[in-house]
Length: 349
Image 1: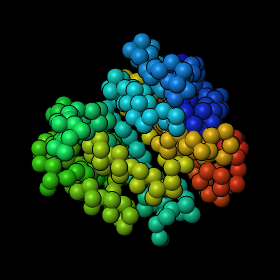
Image 2: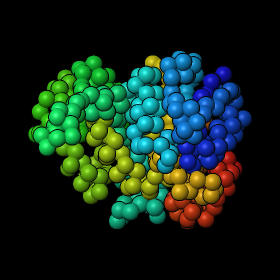
Image 3: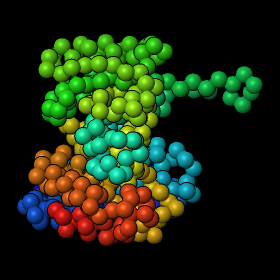
């Protein structure tokens, strides 16, 4: 019996979560697993009413769950940064979800913006360190508000944090067993302190994985090769900021935000899964947003819970629907409503 915490969140989050839950329910009937769920109202509307984001008592309750299924966080009436820091980052840091896992996989060449690229050309995973770096929120102002103002933002990297991320990436590469190649993505020529630590740790850990080929790419070059030769990549490991940037590019080359899902992973604790496209407030309530990213996130969650057959069935159904039914992966252009796309996935399980 799995306990799943559901956080629909803001904007179109509740709409895509509804379809994700619909698919989870259908998969539970087909594959014989049981779950119970509870919905939490963390998000913009709650904050506007109570001025509360997430409190320690909420974190302690969430620790009792098998996994968290998140819709989206972001409200147009709440100042940027409040919800992201008070909910998303607090969840990631408090639950020690130190890996952000982003599969980048093209399901249909029709939706790829790159010329002559096929599904076999775009199939890689980005392993992003999710608890340190610039997102730690460390820094200070000096002489704020004056002409001599200085703003310091600190990239905080520990050997423990870097090593556990790199080890996870090696294990991920080994488990995939495709190209068996792990690429470190950084900026060693400029960020000489943080990336000296990353590079040294990477090659030290690599000695324990003789079956994995290793290489290195500067982050600016990685964005170039994502577009020109995405087939070069298998698994990429990088820090918090660079991972945040390159995974959005990854989403575009796999067909757009409508299909892009991710996981915030604590291999020893509670992990959280979400579509990465955000709350998309302009589409709220219109029943036009693409739910496939949320459905893929639900599939990732079930895989993380070791329901492998159910996860593979969900991915297969998403592939069938996206290749045979949809006119586009973009909101309002799919040829079907949000709810109808969810129904199609259930039908094809």
